[in-house]
Length: 162
Ligand SMILES: [Zn+2]
Image 1: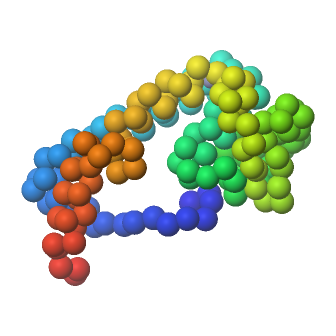
Image 2: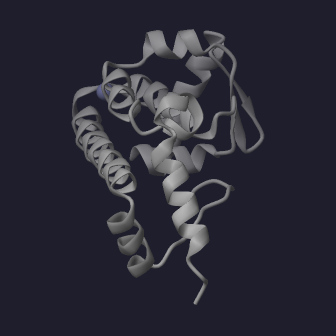
């Protein structure tokens, strides 16, 4: 993991059993994999077609969406590695965004101050990727689509730990 946080693990066999027992869980995970494949393809295209400022905005917006926080705990060095550019380029792009009032640089973190400016400065890749994920965020955003996640939790809790 690049940033601090929590993650869950499940044995392959247990997940396979849960997906067999709860088709909604299988569908939900396949939808997520589809979105992830679209994201990977779009990022590969973005890396060769769009400039650093657009890519940085895309990355910050996607990170903020995942963290659901305005402060992203990441250093300039980590961003440089993630975006495949020199640290000096990241520092210059972050300074540009800071001068626009879009972000505030913190020690070991970046705060998103004006999301609308980032959305204006990013390329179309952000919207393409985000639209693919809208069906995978059932746990947080849409009560009508929560069933697959409930099925996964209840099926997993029903399995004794080995
Ligand atoms: Zn792009």
